[in-house]
Length: 232
Image (tube, rainbow, N blue to C red; front, side):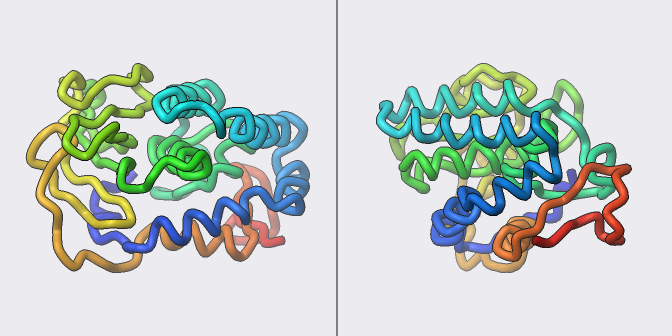
């Protein structure tokens, strides 16, 4: 994970996210994922879709707990270099569940899409870059605000407990973002909004891959493509 790659963020998350959920649920994509990732990967993806359907009517707080637990249980941590042979690769939920592995961004992306699919308002969710003191390196988590003026809760993969940000003494916030803007952190999960932040990011690249119907294969599998990405 490279900390500086996403300081400038594309401010179109929510519209793209709603459209992307439809791409991810496409039956052709699911079937092709089975060819790429085998029976186990296909089963994880199908379980995810069933999980969304089963959780849609639950209350918001319960949904947040369930989503955090689901991906912490179904994805094993693996670095981008180990998994994709790339320094920085933002995997889609289909890719992460297909291989059953991912790094911190991949956990966050999967949790984000799932919470949006369950109807949780975007303004309650932010991606947050932090300094993770237990491993002394940059890290990404998802944060959830029950109310706008409350301390957010942290959905992480190292510490899997759903705790308020001011109880996560192992984290120092750096900045957070969603489709509504970029915030430079001045407190645990809070901060000053940066005006007019826009640009191209790894997020935008990932969305374009989804729209094109691309799936990446695990490092070490020969796809016959130098980018190790197989288009539909």
